[in-house]
Image 1: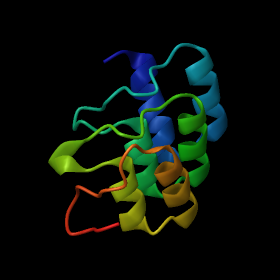
Image 2: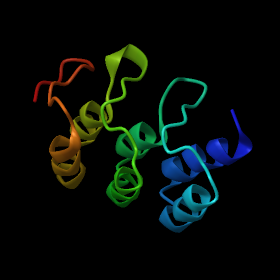
Image 3: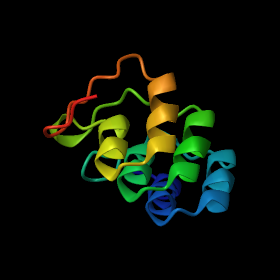
Image 4: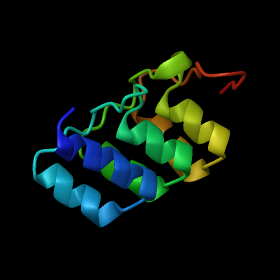
Length: 105
C-alpha cells in the first residue's frame, strides 16, 4: 500500500477531515484498503466520524464495497448508530441490505 493511502486511512480513523481533503487532492485512493481489508470509509463509519464519511462519499468513495466478514460501510454505521451517516450511505448505496453480524436494515 502506498504511504499516502495509509495516511488517508489513519486520518479517517482519527477523524481528521482537513487532512483527508489534502490527501485526496494529492492523489490518495479513496477506496484503498488497510491490512485488514477495510476502506477509509469503513473505518470512518466504524469510528463514528460522519463528517469524514461525507467527505469521502463526495470524493467518490464506493459505498458498496464489502470488507472483512461481509461488512459494509452502512453496516458499520448502523452498528455505531450514526443516523446522519446511515442516511447518507443509504442514499448512495445500490442495496440497503446489511451483511455484517446480526444487523438488519
